Amino acid sequence: MTDLSRVHLIGIGGAGMSGVARILLARGAQVSGSDVKESRTLAALRSMGAKIAVGHQAEHLTLSGELPTAVVISFTAIPKDNPELVAAQQAGIPLLRRSDLLAELMEGSRQVLIAGTHGKTSTTSMTVVALQTAGLDPSFAIGGQLSKAGMSSHQGTGDCFVAEADESDASLLRYSPTVAVVTNIEPDHLDFFKTPAAYFQVFDDFSECITEQGALVVCQDDEHAKALGERARARGVRVLTYGSAQECDARVVGFTATHEGCSFDIVTADGAVPVRLRVPGKHMALNATAAFLAGTLVGAEPQRLAEGLNGFTGVRRRFDFRGVVTHGDYAGVRVIDDYAHHPTEVRAVLQAAREKLESERAENGAQGRVVVVFQPHLYSRTIEFHKEFAEALSAADEVIVMDIFGAREKPVEGVDGRIISDLIGAHYVKSFSDVPRRVAEIAQPGDLVLTMGAGSVTMLGPEILNELH
Figure 1 (tube, helix red, strand yellow):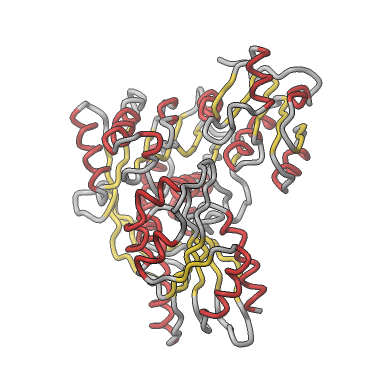
Figure 2 (cartoon, rainbow, N blue to C red):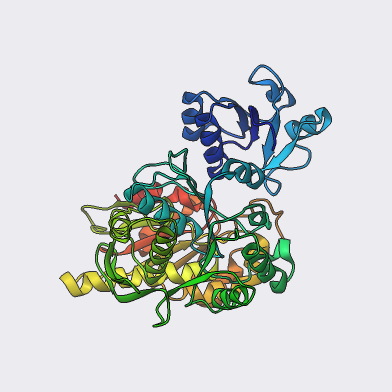
């Protein structure tokens, strides 16, 4: 075990890093850190006792008065020449990835870990809320913030620890789950894995990490997750399934879109439990069923779990309502923000938006359309999936494609958002600041405007609303 009495986190303001920082503070550790810019997250951590600097300098390692006993970094986000990283290496201070730290924080707990290509954050969040309602008070670390509580982590009093298991760099293999959920599997992060086969293999390896008395929960509706379950069962792992098929251990029955979200029953061998979600989409119903099944495996009462799911109000950046225009030429236009940055995620979110509008049309004759502002994320992903992105986005009535958000990647000459927009005749808007005006040229009363992507597009919601007002 690493000495975690004094921990310095480089990039402490990120959703994942700030989450583990909160847990360290709750456990009495001295926490310091740095980030590139000031934020509300940094202010909140300072109020809890963390010592945080803006900018990266070697001297920041001694913000707490002496050198830390461990330094935590994200290997994909922090450059190798970061002065704090270099100083830590020179001083011989142990370096941990966030996943390494999280694994140590979960030691001794019953670990409920949510993995999969899509849906990890929503499913983890639903599991947390359901278990809290059932009275288990789990510790948790989520890659986003619960809309109602505004938190991404918590040090609970119960013996369960719920967390996302990130496969993007194989870091999920650091954990020892009591319950491992795999929502779906589809080739992604090929910049790291190189081949689809290597990507699939990491989930088989993850299933090998399950404790002797633990269980693997897989979505039977997803062919690759289903196949993973079959292989794991053949190796003697206890496997439970959820989905639409009759043979599933937890089955979604009677799915209906509503103007608030969706309704359905979860049917198990013990009977049917009604669920009324406040978030839309069949994919969210499946996520909720995964959370329900995981909750029963750690001893929570089914009806209380369903009550928790009924009270779930969503996760920030997952079909996240940003505002509505109440009067004028754009009355009834709503702006929704979503993190979808893979073709399958885009497709699922647009399907949910369609179902929502159809429910409203059936209820009151509303005639809204789906307008999407999409920002591709990473050059490698855009090049790999540009045809699939175009196909998924074609489900919208109007599409604006922004330039690519490169994040950790350098620009690729000759590649921009037009690699997608040209395939479907969408609007290509290169300038970030021009997007709100272009939305105003396109939008009509009652439309759903979706800002979509994993990058800076999330900041456009308020600007679009201002332009429409």
